[in-house]
Length: 191
Image (spheres, rainbow, N blue to C red):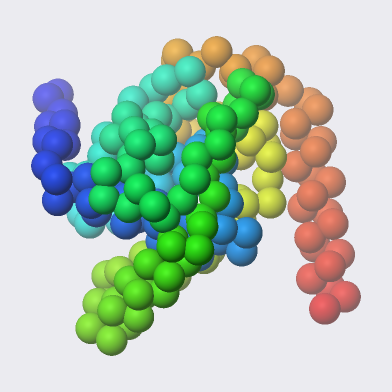
């Protein structure tokens, strides 16, 4: 099977950076780990493949599904370079963090206003999907997020090269996730 890889174009680069901006802007903190950005955009691509497949490609890598196009756009944006700040980290899971700044918040507001005024249904649905992903995954640690990816049948093909699989897929991580789910369930029942 031959897979067509996305071709670099300035327009594709701009679209990827806009997706990162939208993902950061829709998150409650305006700050996400590189791991969270990559995995959430991976899940979005899986759900909306016709809309995003020409932008980036995922391979199995050291921390599960990885896209060079997304990683490069987070670390060194070309069009939205003043919208977020990348902070490196010393852990082996997060990949660092992207933090939306004042210019990024203004650009996010400008873009979303345009999306809603033009009634761009595909992108409005994408924003709604981002909100759902944030609710599901932003509160998870990088270890917990990778646990979900690594133990999902659909994404098994991305663990072959993982150097953190054994560290992540263990009883401690599973128990941590169970606790969080129990806490979330009890909070929902009270509310």
